[in-house]
Structure formats: C-alpha cells, structure tokens
Length: 68
Image 1 (cartoon, rainbow, N blue to C red):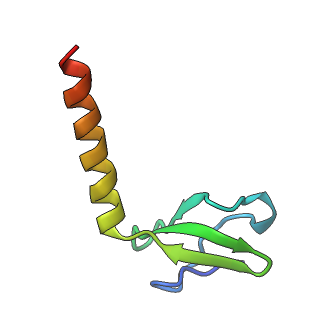
Image 2 (image 1 turned 120 degrees about the vertical axis):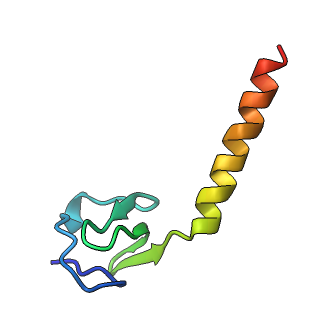
Image 3 (image 1 turned 90 degrees about the vertical axis):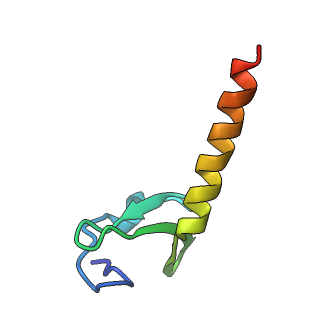
C-alpha cells in the first residue's frame, strides 16, 4: 500500500506497475507526484510552477504554429 505523502491517504496504485517519471495523483487531496525512485518507491511532489511552465511552453508553441 502506498500512502500519499501529502495527506496520508491510500493512493491505490500497484508499485510493481510504476515506472520512473510517471505521474500519480492522489484522489483525496488532488496532489500530483512524480515517481523518482522505484526501490524503495520514492515520490516527489509536482510543483505548480512546473505545471505553469508547461502551460507557458504550450502557449508559445501554439503562437509559433499560428504564424505559419
């Protein structure tokens, strides 16, 4: 059983089926975590800044695409 590092709820995921770099979400608190280690399982909280940077990059790509 994997517990959410944020709210300690059961994440209901199979550790054996995870790969490094995968994103898992807690259904209770909504926090996203990236799998950064497998043995032992290590989760790192995905920061909101990372999400905002991804959105900014997507917006820039759309702007470039619309120029063509």
